Image (cartoon, rainbow over all chains, first blue to last red; front, side, top):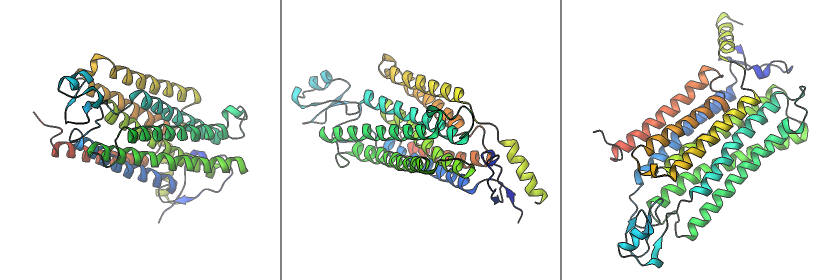
Amino acid sequence: MATAAITDPHAAGHGEHAHYTTTGLEHRKIAIWALIGSECMLFASLIATYLVYKGRSKVGPWPHDWGCKTSNVIGKTAEAVQAAGCAAADVMKPILDIPVTSQSTFVLLMSSLAMVLALEGVENAGKAGYDKWYKGSKFWLAMTAIMGATFLGYQSYEFTSFVHEGLTIRTNLFGSSFFTLTGFHGTHVAVGVLWLMTLLFIDLKRGLKGATDVLLVDICALYWHFVDVVWIAIFTLIYLIQ
Amino acid sequence: MSDHAANTVDRAHADHHEHPTWKQYKWVALWLTLITIVEVWVYYTPFRESSLFAPALLVMSAAKFTIVVLFYMHLKYDHMIFRRLFQVGLIMGAGTLTAFLFLFHKLKIG
């Protein structure tokens, strides 16, 4: 079978031995794209489940509507629920906290910027202009990991406040599908943070440079950006659209 | 190396271009931030009650999704095989989602 040297331009100029593959492409990069493709199907199924169950919960709390603890009355405002016979003390507010989630969305978007700058830092390690701390891979890898951890902090806060307000994974269909979807996403973010911290540890220990290391960071970056694009879809479909 | 392999190498070179620069990455981040601000802003306006609210949000979300995939994930600049692998997963996922929504009457024709 014919083989070809990998043609990833990152490999050029680093003095490393090229691998030979039948496609001329790095197998690990093909593998991460195949994984991302399959993850698209996983998250599409979870989002589809959430949307199918949306509006079918028999008891509250509800994501966007005001409700009543003692009856199945729901409405667009607290006044509408009270007008339908619910006592003021029993009124439940919509459970989704858009301002808090908007902040966590912004943090995750900015972590993607930090990730591409980390990759840029590794690709250009040792070159003129990239010796400054704010252009180096260590700084940006650390920033990405910190922002990922911050996102997880926001999610922990959100989950905790939901539980305090009476919404658990067993409360209703909304709770089951919401915690499953966002829980899966949060787990992916947690895996990404661990991955980033591993790369940061390697960078601090011996430095990330050369084609092989660029590929390692590139693969992690692709995973991280995918986690970001999944959240872009979740934020719109689950949080903003009623 | 065989001719086939040489062709593969040439094709791959032809499909691969330089990545965006620092400046371009920052512009992309600015656009993503602006779109997110508009998304959240319209949520708090009377436009929220409009029938165009959901389509407008979906368009903005799709724009953000595309920008990240093309520029941050370098799919615009990378090899065709990577693009195809992503497209297959995305089309199958979107197809499954749409089929479920029709199956459970969340979407209707007519």
